[in-house]
Image (cartoon, rainbow, N blue to C red; front, side, top):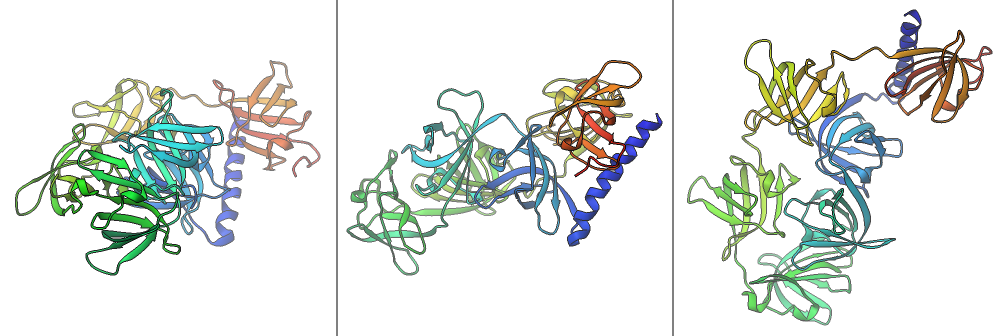
Length: 504
């Protein structure tokens, strides 16, 4: 197929022509990143990706960035925490995203302001143009504020809120993650030493006292022996233990958390650091064993701030063997903060061979020598088919496959498949008999049925051997195209106008 080889060479030349100027113009070089989204900020237009090696890359998103999620073009707000980044092409000098393809579970996206949080921190209400929307918060809900790990207690009435909820839920959906962007806050923690009008003075154990102003938007929460409840300025008394986040310029408090008199007022906080020896996400408990001394068993609640490898996390993300440091209330052993690091994490195992079994949730790979390995596939598994993003339905028995997986859990982090059954693209040559911005119809010149092909952002278009667009395709022009015979999606089209025109 000489024409097929010619068109393929033209496609290669086009890609080279498009790539060289972008690199040479500013001396930039391209880099490829893959991994998992740890945080994002729509205000800063950034997202943080953790790679398989454990490194974190903060990437910039601009109007020129092309983002896809589950095969569809999306905006930054439509990407969710824990999405698998299949591949991201970035400018290695500026870390600006050129193209990014991600995959994750189906979610809905809601943006608005913070309308309120239930005192028990089990529900969140967001103001939207269509009215308030309520979301259920669970122990698996991840929180990020200004690109950093946070908890529901860190949100303020001045924040803009982005919520990704699990699709298909009831009228009050479950929030998978919550991203907040708002003014940076200073913090003070200590004892309330004075209350005058709307001003509250908090004196830390070390350092100078800080007086913050309570406004109508200040969120006040009271920690009692029975749980957490919403409070008012009248509940703030001298002698209570308090923590406040406030605007460093105006000193207006965004939030104040305090222990009322009937809750003991003075809560002593302890610290433990060591190795995680037990985790029960269902019961909300974790045990940390220090190098010296007895293990400390802690309980977590919705206000516990949890991070792992400096990223927002839940208790289920922490593994036995992790190094962890925690602060907790001495009287109750309830943790206020837990920071874990995967110091004992090992490199993933690897296997290559032939696919001998495949389902929607698992794949078995049999090497040339050795025993078959059955692997679990989940929403975080990156699947590549013939070098392109794919799904579990693309994996067939008999395909060649290589996989990276956790040797303990047998969960695959990446599966690369070479399909033995893939066919060469179909080809059609003739004249354009219809053209729109999203499709083109080519009628063969020597008989045969006309073929209508779909155009997309990935279709390579050449007009008189120069890069072109769908707008350059005119009825009557000669055309030669490669396309997927199953989907009728155009891969590449070469247009000849005969007069050298047609390209703008």
